[in-house]
Amino acid sequence: MNNIKNILKQIKLNTKKFLNEKQFKKIIKSKKILNIKIGLDPTTSNLHLGHFVLFKKLKHLQELGHNIIFILGDFTGIIGDPTGKNITRKILTKKQIKINAIKCHKQIIQLLSPNKLKILFNSEWVKKISLFRLIKIFSKFTIYKILERKDFKKRYKHGFSISMHEFIYPLIQAYDSVVLKADIELGGNDQLFNLLIGRELQKIFKQEPQNIITMPLLEGTDGKKKMSKSLNNFINLKDKPGDMHRKLISIHDNLIDKYFNLLSSKRKHKHKTIEIIKQKQTQTIKTNQLKLNLAFELITYFYNQNIAKKASILIGNKVNNNFFPNNIPKIQFIIKKYINVPIIYILNKSGLVKNNSQAKDLLKNKKLKINNRIIHLNYSLIINKNYFLQLGNKTFAIIHLKGP
Image 1 (cartoon, rainbow, N blue to C red):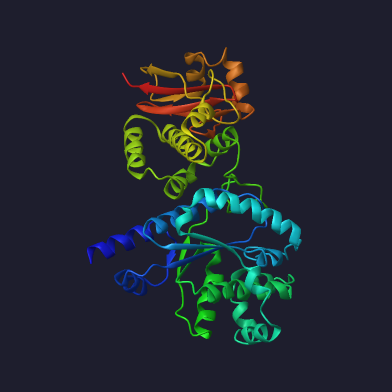
Image 2: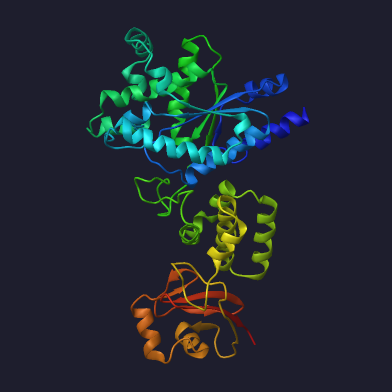
């Protein structure tokens, strides 16, 4: 029983939703090898780190002995998934989808074990469905049911158009689960509605309904919306090492813990690193170190360690490609004169500026950041704390103030 609990705990790690634990425990006890379905519409030729979140979970399920059935939606991709869209997507041509699918196929086989993997195209069975069978499927679902979907409900409420082919998308995707007799379907949390429709369709066809696992959505480089090529906030798995390093180092500070949880495999090392840095340095320095660690780990994974080392090399005390240097000077002061220390005093005392006028210009033009925040003229520092200073794009320093 403890073993079942451990397996369940491992599978649930970092998931957003795990639909039916009771059903899954029965399957584990039976030692059945599961068919785990995941679908991807090849509307773009490259996979990104948002997809990698799903691949990590798939890899773990393979290691537990289960089969992954990866659907490249060359038919559903022509329709275009309406999830999260306020307007109807542009319909892609068969040629565009085919080219994208071939490139995605190559990336998938590099990320998952081929022994427990099938990659299929849903046009193989969808194109064989008769009109009579389609009508039978559609008759089991109402417009009201489809309008339960949040994005459809929102578009309908605000008077935005919804095309008929968008309405049928969840049903066509769900039919894949019927054909494959899927035991589990994995997807991003925004796919929950589509996955639940798959369960309902399986019931109609007298099949055991699939369990559902959803994963959190990874915000993109804008720090707000989910990673997506259409939003230009993505980090591709095929990005050049230097570009991947630059983008990862530039992610918003409040996202680093989530990125680490969902993308890193070094959990024990991660916690140790966090603890050491918490004891010795400021929150900002800790965050920057975690970004460097994650960038090194992912570039090593997709390329190799030597390439990862080259991607992380920085020269001098200058910012390179929008990320911080490794060799930031540390300056310590013993403060006797002040309780709250004026920032202009520190800039002059440290030699980071030539005079008061230059210091005031920096502050006036919003070119001074402390702990990654732009600060004002009257800002004061407190003794016995560390501060991370950035002056423009070229000068960095860690300032520590000690009391008398």
